[in-house]
Length: 268
Length: 69
Image (cartoon, rainbow over all chains, first blue to last red; front, side, top):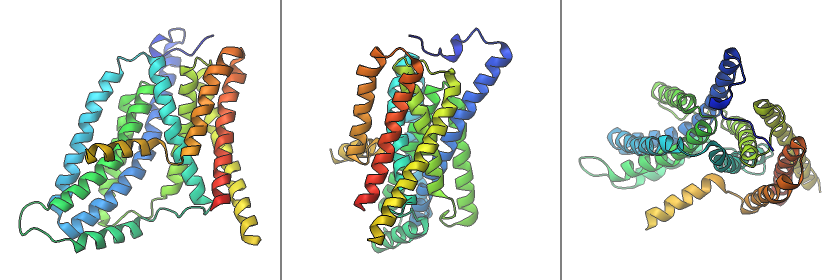
């Protein structure tokens, strides 16, 4: 049984070939990290905006900054530590986690498209949060505890998913920088848009992004789980393409099947 | 203690939403690791079995979700 080797051991390729493989890995790590981070940052921004408008910006910004610092500490701790874990074991563990994560997103996005569960509505969430936060009493001076805790929790919870994706995709592909760059770019884009618009980013196609990320991460997860189980994928890294394509086809079949079932239920 | 429980819940929630779906995925991975990988030589068939099972679980779960809604 053979398994495809980590990049550092692929000496049989020429320099140009290695550059292409490294660039492909970097892109493959950056893309899901960017798209997934867009989704998570948009969700966090909605709550931070609601906190800022109702409880004041100091508590919203300090809460967000504290959560970002805690998440950065997580990345700083786990990122380098994972570099010492053997690649096959790492890919198996992260591949399984990515599979669960990616398939969960994919299933949820498909159920939303099929009309089984409601679509995510940032404007409605913003209004709901704003009303709830406005009812609590505010301190006369200093940082507002409720605002701080709400912003902290929102950024920490949504950011935890970003951290997981960056660590999982970055470690599995040995492309931390690319995965982190994807997440940072998404953060800059969302914060920039939030500062410019001062409103929830409800026009971001959250469900379409979730579907794409679900397909990509399910493909990555399957590939690395297979590598960890010593399944020698035909075509090595190129099999990622047919895995992602395969999950896209499976998602289409699942959507068609779900909408057919719903049509049959409504017609009877 | 409550904070730890909340954190554990949030962490688990990253990976598991529908317990039956997660259980099916987990069992399929165990089946591939214990039965398929050691007994089938062809890497193509092993890879296809891993992917095919997961795709089937996804399709079944989404269809079932639509049926129950």
